[in-house]
Image 1 (cartoon, rainbow over the protein chains, first blue to last red):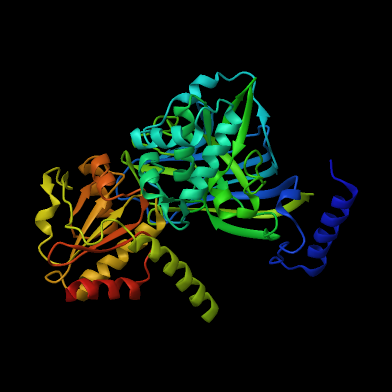
Image 2 (image 1 turned 180 degrees about the horizontal axis):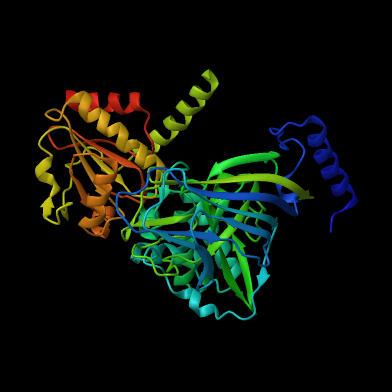
Length: 334
Length: 163
């Protein structure tokens, strides 16, 4: 529910946009990110063929965000130059297309309305937590990591207190780097101490699993912070703008969210990101080491944006194809 | 424009600071036997007979794709006799992806399938792009773990050519 004060604030701001007609207005000085309860955006996700791959037989998988306790997806429309199907694999949904060839400039566009909520702990009753104790091939804990965890955690048994000790330890010893494409290998990040979201969360997940605490990997795309979002905007859906976070199990069906890398980037939100998530993200898939439907040939570390194969081999992003997200801000609930 | 250039410079300076702290700098370049695009297992050390850039890349990284274009131009500018470029595709587990990658992007310098834990651990590759600059004595002089602007790339090449 929108408070009266919040309603007046957001109504005033949106009226301001309408009156000025500007699409570059920033809310920076007016909105506190942690006060925002939801953001509603009209999204157009487009995959465009830049240069058709030389190999024949093109397969394209595009992740489809789903409605769950954290977000609502509505008014979904898919525009494609070729026949497509909607597929499911595990917890993930996707649009799948196959053609012998695509032409330069061919575009697949997915239109929908996203209402992303600020979230905290959620209850997922029908899930077996133990399935989230299985590490992906990129999440390992060697003797250096286990010794570190043992030293940091000591005799603590409470999952939330263990989580906080490891969250703080990772933030304090690591450096965030933005404009790179991470591989999310926990052991290498532990040694190198430099990475972005996938590295931070691979290490956190590995450490928690070592302590026997199940952790879900949530994969999405980063949206602008509510305080910085514009009336309209556009960005690439690629490895730079992909974003991951995790939820760990605290018992009785409850899953507790943490965003370790954003806590590193935003020291003012360090306490907030242990247990809450700002609606500056869109979840598109769950897990790592993804198997698509139909099954792909290559290995997919995370499924945050379109994956394309040509002749059974991964195509080249930025050369063969490109993904773009365009958004329009429809509503912000404060 | 000037402010944008200053901001870019600050960003790149910050990340360069991180990269130059690499523990590899000052050490003899480690080498491995890896599959090339013809499916031959080759010790890529045999190519390090002159100042060399070892470039770690993969298929889903836009910046990495752009750096390939910069490396092609650098190879033409400085000459193949003076500068060696070696690509390592960290997504590739066999020759097929390397072959397709080279054909798509149209470059001729050697590339190897490098999705192997020992290689990635030795070179401390947890993200891409990463460029490793090696001098004529096979000593690693600089490791850059981010997109490079062309003037910075050329300056770093000049530094390894002079050693």
